Image (cartoon, rainbow, N blue to C red; front, side):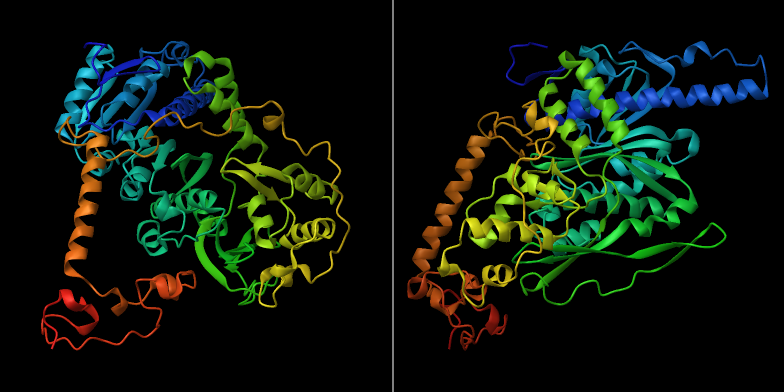
Length: 581
């Protein structure tokens, strides 16, 4: 393999050949580094569990260790096949970069199955494993990803780790994944369809994840909670449940690590971890409604019953605006903080091993600082924007909440986020005190505005804005890298792999622009009278063009009298139809 080749990729200890027709995104090096750190810590737990089981056998049958006691020491060398190591499935391997890195950088592996449906991709997996001298660890496989998992559902054939990193949504693969994992196995899932999970298309979100997403400022954490709920739902069908180890929202995707266990008693409690979400469209207030309540009985057991409602009124009690309903979402903890701390220690001790170690340290440190039992967050900028007031500094808001006796933290999902145990009323009381010192322009105090509704109430206490000793978290004090710097041109999600190496991103962009120009030229030639069609932005109340708008601002546009029997009048395209009577 020629290192000077334009398709030659070096990442971590791996060197692979990755042509354009096989998918590869360099921006997701952070994703791969994080996965290697997490799986390495999972391997450590795997061997610890094996030693505990061997210890029990020793107590039951003294002197009979089957000759494996020494083999169960923590592995310390990578690239070596371990008899009692873990089996990993990378279900959608593409070029095999991730699998090769697993083999070279994670100790304690028995086998890695690198699967892809594309013959081209599998050929390159084979070449890359030979080049990196890991053929004894990495087994190329060409098959449907779900079929591979369904064929390994027998207890003896199950995997210790399954990695799902598809192009778009992972939902089609979750059913097979939760069945093909050993008890206590690690499931790693990436989803890049953030427009769906973040509330842009709630109907599509429901069809894929069986939950309605909301267009809210906490949308990135919402995405994590929707995916966790979806995985739990698939697991519950087979008397299994999940325990989240780490849930990360990064850049244009989310990445989740969960362990899957078997246990009917725990499955019964899964509904207690789900809630519906009520969200005010104007002030951003939100309320969670659990689906099931769990009550302890006199004999030490539990009784489950439907939660009582309604928990909110049809109109927001803060600003009297309408509320949207979303969910169900996962309402329990997103992370196992003890596990995250161990992963963080591993990263700090092996800084040279990870190309994105600085950002790994920053993100993981932020996650350890998050309030674990507080779903969702507020965005400080949006709170100021709602009142059209001078921006309240983040440290001032955090200090005021701490002085008032509430807990507060950042969320790794958003730069200016505020996670707090304080109810929304307390947050607005702090802003009411702030506005008294920095008055709002009276032009915003209209009778129908949320500004006047919120500020018409007197604060219930006097907010203290003096800096609190705990207002500035360690991750911020140390100046840790918490947010991705734009690494260069065309940063972000990549297009699907193409069949030809010649179709570069620049060429595809040029073709797209040319098609758009052609559509515009055709529209001008047809001389369409757009006043026949209603203005969608006017219906939504956000078109400010008035008479200059090319579309009609009349809500009920007269139907055309079209004689074309092949379609209804509602679908008629006016003068372009050619069938008007």
